[in-house]
Length: 429
Image 1 (cartoon, rainbow, N blue to C red):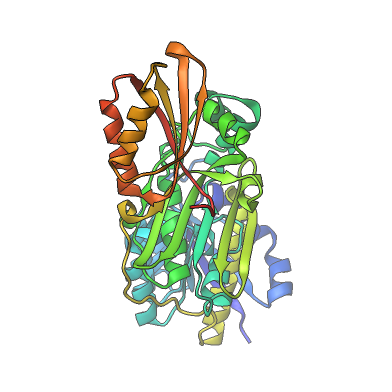
Image 2 (cartoon, one colour):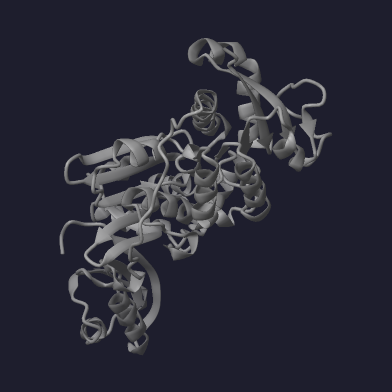
């Protein structure tokens, strides 16, 4: 029986290069373990002259991306070039040509997932994206296969290693945001332009995918509210620790009474919660369900080698399906569902106010919250006079009401600044 599968790869950056190296250097061991002879036929790159950390036969490297789709000796396509437009068009062309596709492109899956999944269904081939969320952490298969029958209630995820590294430095060493970001860039955890990471956009794409799989309702990238970490201060990290919390950038997807809510923003998590102990560039995904209780998946969420491992797992599944001529990986299906606007989601706030310490200030602030229908749970004061800080934690209320209360604070004459706002994750009301 011929077990040879021709593989074409679009993109040879950090992950693509690691994958090519694995396929070339470990070809024999992969064949011995799986019975598959995975042969790299073409690798499409932008610059043929750029130095590479892998070695392939003459003629394998090409700058003609379409040749990866058109080559009849290529049975399976791996997309690792990133972006949504060109990459999406190439993936769609491959699927329509009857070739299974493996990708690690979270932006592509989150923005064009339904169309690509439908194209794969029409052609009867696999469209797999295990590496799109969590790097080397296996999470797509558990959600779409192992937990397919579980009515998942909630997913909480630290799904961006860059921001978790920065927040860890700020919390443990008291470093400020700018210095922590610079260190992350020096170590290669952050890109020269870190906007996608620190703004929460990268995590939002992953949150959309996780929510879609967890709840069976498609959530698009534009449906996910997101905030970043650039407004956070090490001062708030210290206060959070004093109150028994850690601050993390968290993707939250949960089933509410009227639908599904998906969002990304900084969260104060109790120190005894499993996510609170996730340090550095590590990722972790926490799943809650009525039958399974609580599940935690944790590991390296980025980097060439871990992500290439997840991609390779999908390549092997797709190759097995191609050789068997039958479905191996379960097809992903979605049904219509309602999405809950973030303004309707119940949230708790921690809010740090810079105020002039005058008689009656607390009463004015309480009135600002009360007029919006928000109850204050606790208040702490730090400092005196013009250096006074008020640290307020609210009871749970609609996000829209919390924001109305924040707007009302502008009318408090003694308020100098709303220095920070962080949502609080807590089982208490």
